[in-house]
Length: 408
Image (cartoon, rainbow, N blue to C red; front, side, top):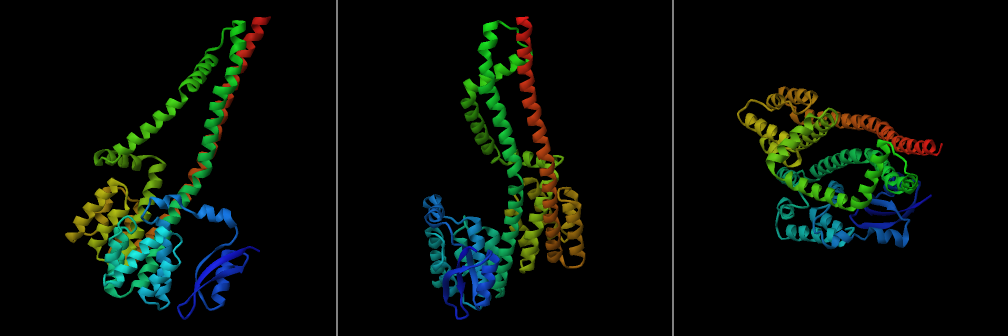
């Protein structure tokens, strides 16, 4: 069984580090708890110098803000310690002592120093907007006002973990289709630039009249061989220009609206946006943030300008007492299921819990739709690759048959 390095908190508040042998990370955590300690970290101890080298983050030399996963881990650890009865200063000291790298330690040192100087935690977090977004700071501010910081951080960590899981679902599902598409493109380019040119001298020496399809493929291979690098550079420049263009609100709005109207991708995008919107809104309302303020914070986590416009109109409607769900329904952007649950939450004065329920449903819908999309993409890419290779081979065979006819 593998060894696991762990960091734990004793009932007295002291930090304990060590290693244990267990069948899995879950078993290692269970062993730590049986010892009467609170587990903070448990990770495989294998890897030696190679693992140490891989952990060294070169980007940390130039990046001063925290990654989202690092913020999630810190939030979870801080919520555990506050829930165990530790005061904020002692909990922050623990985070500084166990920081995984100098960059994280530097940020945590600054936060702890600000808190020790009399600043509130939310004010200290607000000084690092690249690391802690407005949603994070807003929830911490509401928690400090209500005296429920530990529980709020626990819910905030859950929110961030759910969002990370949603993104990971999309990324992981697209790995295989992306690799398959890359292999297909590479195979076709290899055939056109390396295999097919081997037969060109043979055709030229015999003066054969090549079929139109074969000549077209030979010309395509020559074009790739001569200008392939320039084509790649052009595509990179085009991508950079497109990215710059998307920073213009008018262009971005057109693209976002078009994305929502696409047959398959549009439905998946709507589900993702609905899950993100309802999860964030439900978490904010559950932590005592007023609806209008919550909608203002939700805007920061929605990346689609078409949805932002609908949220702005819904905010104005809510200010006038007309409700949230009706305006969102008129926008016809979010799925009908999300609108129905939001309306039910407004009618029963349970908007926060119903939003979280809607988030769970739409997160499950995202997983289902991603599975269906992958199930559709893989055979499509396979068939297209097979057809392309078959077309190249058949064109080559036609040219060889023309040589045979010429010899006879």
